[in-house]
Image 1 (cartoon, rainbow, N blue to C red):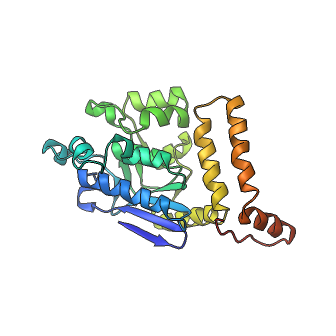
Image 2 (image 1 turned 180 degrees about the vertical axis):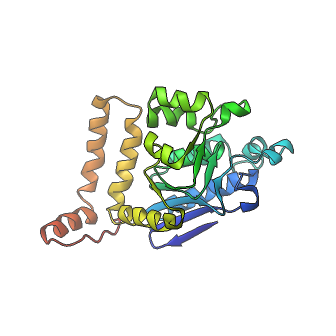
Image 3 (image 1 turned 60 degrees about the vertical axis):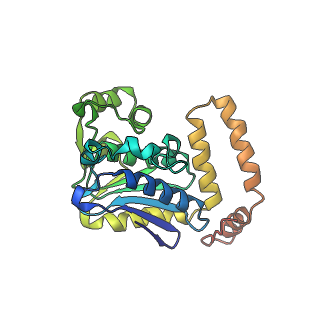
Length: 258
């Protein structure tokens, strides 16, 4: 389920009877919703959340046992979804900033989805469960790449090797979430964070995310020229002029994404 509110697109995993466990159909729908929001020039922030008491309980094991899970979804309809368009990869490659609003538990695949977002705000009753090794699996959807970068090797190893589950306060202490708030205040806290990002120059925000992502895999010497090549076109935008004028005129800027 996808909704727009101004410059913010909220994508909601809406299967509360299964704690938003991901079905094969949901894999396709989630990728499509993320790509659609990223293409919308009016959208400056994407929020990913869940309905009910969970963010996402992972891949639907009942579907998987009936042959309707991740594997069949990857090749179920030609051109619709393969691993290059799976939700965790889409989350990584889109330039629109993403916020995971963790309204409840995030386990397995749901844990990787949350880690794939740029920012995470958790309700105080949420739990993050990297339980893959306790199911005879690996973090298959980005966790093995993301977690050493988010936590460092030792803490990522502690979390993943033992299949640990963290409470929201523990996740904050470990640095896996940006904020923990009372459950009743989650929507307001996420809206505040999204509004702060949406108020910045959208072309500059997208370029910043793109450059941060590139910087994960290249040397400093290669990265600096790449950033400069992103910077020059930005200085010719209306938003750059608006940023300079608003600073000189001591007023909030009004960016148009142009």
